[in-house]
Length: 449
Image (cartoon, rainbow, N blue to C red; front, top):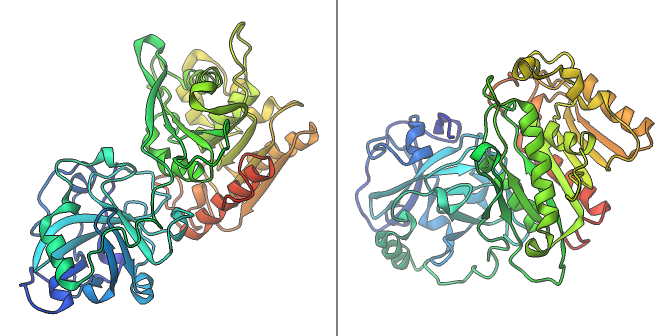
């Protein structure tokens, strides 16, 4: 969920309080940053009072900066200089407040596409590469993040006071940019793919909206990281949406989390295989090609993706659990010396029996690895050895190492063994490399970005 987010990182200065209505564009409509931290329960759960938080002394965006505001899609087209003032937010987001006619209307967050948090307040994803159909001068205010289902109560974006203010400025225009930012991916559809021990495990399916004739489509299943013991499918929603925008059917998969009692990483590995089998069994209804299912994972999730290929058991009468391609980010693939993994296993087994680097063989799927050179969680030597062993066994493995970046692309010098702090530029480059790799295998069309 959301972590403590402070707007001081972006142009915020203390001292501003409630404005009174006036005739200037800044008085009529504005977006302010805050001059003090926001309780994470407010942004994460929609619980708590934010109305008395201090605003910055001057607005970040005013009515003068607006070219137009599409009321139907909540897409703001801004002047270039206004876009340039919005800096990359941290993974926990940068809070802002929308003000109309001197009144605070709602609290929202500037966020990055690489955030693994979920938020109950409106959110603006600032990354220019969020959608191939969205112009870089247009920012869409989403109901919540990563999907609208995380919102609580009435939609504050539709407050009539905002519409009145925008109309007064001559900026409210129905669908002037709507065609440009029309969503190419719908809301995820939840399916129960297995119920081990009576616990329903869900697959959240993102499908492209546009019918471009690519049926059946290539698919990709995503496994979130979290040390096998924490996390939720929503952490993978933004990446899943990205791949769906490239024309793939993307599935954010749930798996059982280790509790140091009865549930271990062994169960999570079984769940990873189960969801791939389910995808193949449901290929017709999901409109996917069962011979083109890639697996994407980061950290512990990358272990599950790799394990589905390497430890793919054969079940009579069931579809194969082997993915057809792997994209592994900061992967946990060398576990012999991983004390945490062994602790989670308990007496159920030895880490070496579940360490992918010790079980490489011929016939494994093409693999892309994206890794930081200073990673302290999944160190480079073990990851590099895994890739070298794949190649030695006549498998395809491509690896890109980001120098002076740690786990999940956290810059060197910043602890990388806690909350990830990915560098936005490096994370964007890694995602682009993943797209190019999948395109080389025919999982994305040449027209996809």
